Length: 563
Image 1 (cartoon, rainbow, N blue to C red):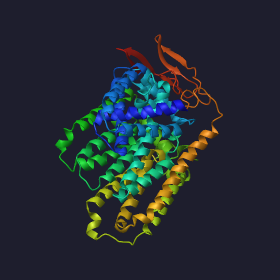
Image 2: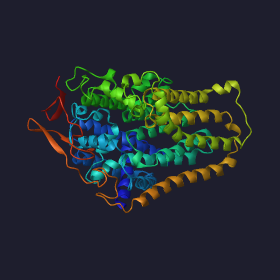
Image 3: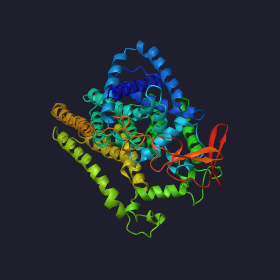
Image 4: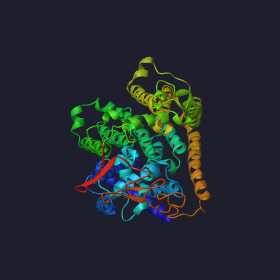
């Protein structure tokens, strides 16, 4: 346990140091320091991605990066007045990270199938041409895998790949709590919005085992929406830099969250486009995005896999044959069908193509995925209603005049409602599984609720509801801590390799599995496993690879289709 806490604390310091190197913000408040830490994850991810075009991100490379920023910390932070506050934040972050990491599982089955195997690929290989031909899921990995990979250094070793997402989560928690404390009396609307989304985070993302590639993107989209709400009364050009860079990072986490770009676009079109384009931070964001899209083309033949319209059929490693599972058309259709309840269908004769047409899928989806989503949302919606009742009882109702309903602040709220509504609609029509669109849905309901309350909020008696909110907040935090403590207590006696870290090698013993090397022209083609590959020899897959040739060219691996 002590190792998890120490490494988690160092992880937070690492992120904050990197964030300061990126945005050079002389932050003095707790929330700003946490925000800088989140930007640190952006810098490390982009650095890992860039370096992987030329090197494997092994422990040597990762250690060089780590110790470079350690020197930067020693030079930079010991001159700063915020050193003490930064250390306190890191310790608190370390405690939260330890609480959610200790004796928990990884995100199953996806982590074992491709999150961990692809991280291992990054650690052991330069970027691979046609990696998706080994395992189709390698075509739609996340920037999270690059962030995890660069955490495997000589200090953290293999366990380092578990730290960054948990550290970002803890920084977000501290950020939101600090914002509520600082802004409650000054900006009631913003504070209420933060309170509601924080309540959902404690309820919806309270386990490390729920942190797949989706979770970080959703958490950061919620984070961006809070920045938008906070700046609802202002037109500060500097906010464009933060929102643009974070939007690119979120898109790289989950392409289905592409709607996030609508938020910085609001500010971009409010000012001179020239100022936007020639801003250093935004140029950095554009280069970062271009690197990511280039990486996607190299690994899958598509800008965004498996969106067929973004694919380049002339590339030797791209397959457009219906015989291949890696075919983007097949994967796109299969993914849509599964999210719409394909496994639960009763008609075995219907094809996937016919199943997803129109709303043929809706009755089956409603009885399964739809019901599960309703159960997950119902608790949050009941919570919203309780909050609304408590607020509305504390003051006399007062509707704004008609002209005030469409002032600048309300227009921005309506814009956020529109963006989240559009995102929710696309989610429902194309990939209606809750983990794909949860942030859109939560932002929609929360911002709509805030918009309605804002037309009454002027006469609120802050003293009346303060005690109620403090009690409610205490109960939410207590429930979060208690749930994780009970989980830890339940698993204390269960011993396994690398206890008490989450299992990254196998399940249930976490022992390193033996994979079978498959050769091609006396070279190791790939490793074949009879179970999920986890974080073992790479590149690893559960599938026998056919009709694919393998070659080494200038140190780069090529997996090309035999056309």
